[in-house]
Image (cartoon, rainbow, N blue to C red):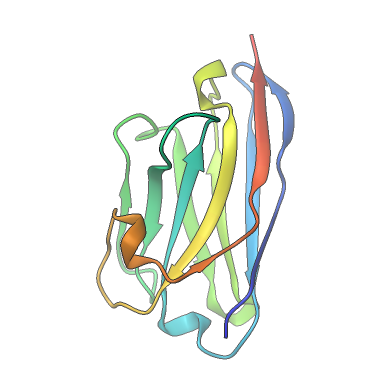
Length: 124
C-alpha cells in the first residue's frame, strides 16, 4: 500500500509561484509513474502533469505547459510541481497520484494511489 501526502498549497497573487510536494510511503515509489491532477468544485478532475518512474520523460496539460514543471527525487520518495506565472484559473485542489506503470498516462483511471489534495488559490 502506498500513501501520498501533498503539501505546499496556499494563496498567491496572479503571476506568483508555488511549489507543491508529494511524499510517498513505501519502497516502490521509484517504480511508479507519478502525476498531478486538479479539480474545481462541480467540475471533473483534470490532468496537469506526469513524470515517468525514472524521471526520464514528462508530459503536461496544455493549460500549464511552459509554466509548470514536474520533477521527482526518488531518494526522497517525493514528486514536485513547480508552478510559475500562476493565473486565477489555476485555482483548484491539486492531487498527487501514483500509477504502477512504466509509461506516462493522462487518464486518472490509470492511477491507483491518490493523495488527499492541497488547495491552491490564485487571486487576481
